[in-house]
Image (tube, rainbow, N blue to C red; front, side, top):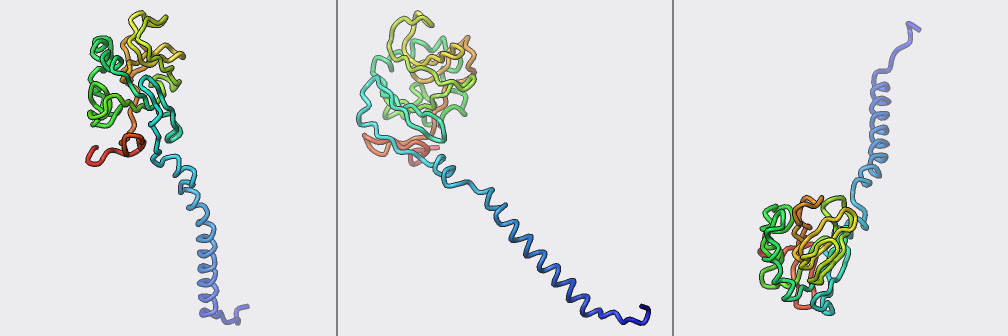
Length: 201
């Protein structure tokens, strides 16, 4: 009615109260949504460093552990296997490991390992072509896939080959060397995967 008086104070109070209650409701609804963006405990653990016991890995043997959902191979290479590295250089795509994304700087060398422990090779065991897991073929002898085989890795999916330092051969589908993850030795019996040695990048 035209004679009704509008209570402006009451109107402002109701408007402010409605806004505050609505804002609080939106905040309460947003908290679980924002929490869902944070990684779960399982996801955090999957990316955490992993400690591996290498005390029982004999020369010529491989230990497989999981890190970030990927197989990591820790291989104790024999002196005979290490001696083959120079012999295959001319057959490799990247013999000097110049693709810096494939290994930490301290493993950017002929053995693709820490210089003071060249016999130990740590590598992610996934072919760089389409993600198959190559076979570990450490014997230095003729193989059906390579009559001049010096030991290394052979991917049965699409016939890619890598030497015993994970360097990819020419003329195969795989485009790059096998990746070397960050790692450090805790002592002579343990390796930590996922962290660099002190002072290394």
